[in-house]
Length: 240
Image 1 (spheres, rainbow, N blue to C red):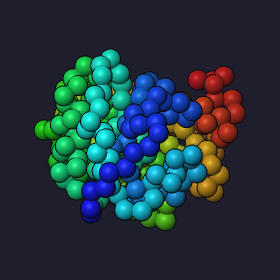
Image 2: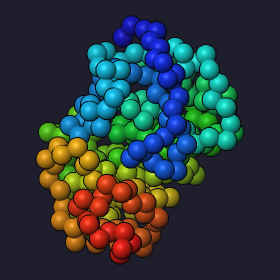
Image 3: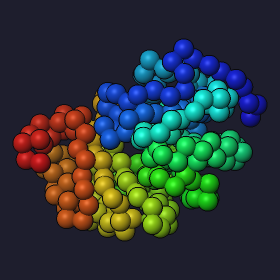
Image 4: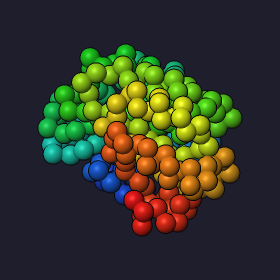
């Protein structure tokens, strides 16, 4: 992959808004182009920045020209999986080294290729949260080219003494017992759960099953409910 310089009017770092994690203050995307995971439900495909995430993946050199400040909680790679298959190692290493220069921030690194993400543990800044998306417990080859959700969880639990989170968004039909077992094995600090926001016709579980999942998750971890889950569970905020 040839490194290309590309700039946009807003710069590389932006404040979080919309359906983004409310606990993150900023997002930064030092790699752009088509994400190799190619998830069917990816919100970027219908966002106002969709044109920036087309074509071959490329590194945004301006990321290294600007400081990251301090006192922020930064989601690094909110629109592009930094650790996806095929991304150049030197890009990833240089991004992590740059983040490490600003140790007074907290960084979120979330990937669907947690096996590859685990390789870079020595490069991570001191204050981090690592996470993955696990929409279900079953393989979803028609929905994403990323490793299976269970494989993601297997490698996420390899991170020791590091805060971990799991995103169940968009929630897809699951086997409750197996799903809970695999999530619990990771020992996540919290789980975020939400629904498909863009009508991608995914196989979604019924409301009562989602509520049971949340009830069981709360027995061993914190659960953060996204507002878009209200479409599937209209009374979720009255019972949560």
